[in-house]
Amino acid sequence: MKRSIDRRMNRPLNRRSFVALATTGLATTALAGGAGAQGTYPDKPITMVVPAPPAGGTDLVARLYSDLLGQELGVQVIVDNKGGGNGNIGTAIVARAKPDGYTLLMQYSAYHSANPALIKDLNWKPDDFVGVAMGAVAPHVIVVAKKVPADDLKSFIAYAKANPGKLNYASVGAGSVPHLGGVLLNKAAGLDLIHVPYKGAGPATADTVAGQVELLIVTPPSVSAHIRSGNLKALALASGQRHPAFPDIPTTAEAGLPGFVLDGWFALFAPAGTPQPIVDKLNAAMRKIGKMEAVVARANQLGTVLKDWTPAQMNDFAKGEVETWGKVIRENNITFTE
Image 1 (cartoon, rainbow, N blue to C red):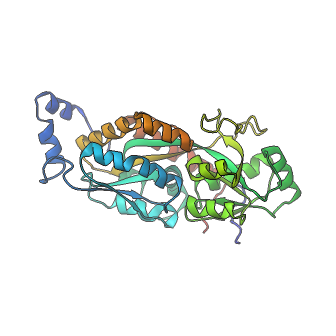
Image 2: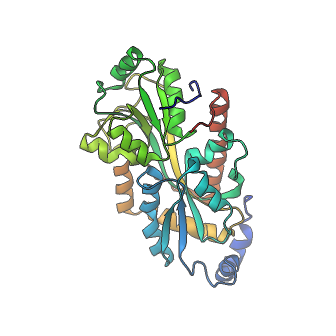
Image 3: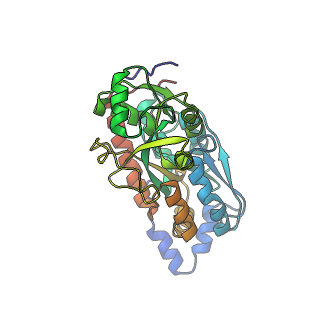
């Protein structure tokens, strides 16, 4: 396996015009005009692009919403996995799509927040998108293969220190939160774990379960079933508090590594320029779904937290994340390596 060369590491649209139209009974006309001469939006299937392979956290969150979103809107919502290129293949497809509400992106936080600082000559930029709604926020969990002779974080750190340069950690791609988390874990605990990037959470999880790599830091949706079955051992949750779905997993602070907190997120975006009435309609449907009892229960089971955010809140948050993770990448001299 090749060692990572890193060493350790719209425009806010004015909504007043739409409100005015709505109060005069013309909201339907506004929606129809925003969708083009195709009638009231939506009047045909919507494609939700997932820039990652099936079975990972982004895919699971997309499928948590897709069928119910279709029911709310009265059309089919098709999940289309376009993995590869560290998320850039699927992301670029949506960036270039017509801004009519029929091609959406369920985006993973690191693709959106880290790739702009990580990859030179990126074929898309964060401003190519407008936030629609937050799908789910997920703290990252530190898991190890069953073969690893450690059942808690302290014993793993001791084991890794006794075997410098001999243990590997998987990530879902260069520049992903799991990759950056491994860099920060190396620094925080004084370890020398070797980075092994994969093309998505699915294959990274599979190789960790198989014992091909020792450690994985990832969002709970990708590994929750394996934790419950005993195929993976959960050492700590990189969060400020325990999650109700995993009450027995200690936080990193409780496990002896205070300050080590990693949050990932999965959010729905549309191409920049998508009419605000369409964005608002999608946002309202997503937020309604996020309050459904069955969806809340499933999100908790996956180890995620739902957020009832407006498009403006989603946009402000995403902008801040781009700035935060860009700084981490630059300060730790992290480079993109496959």
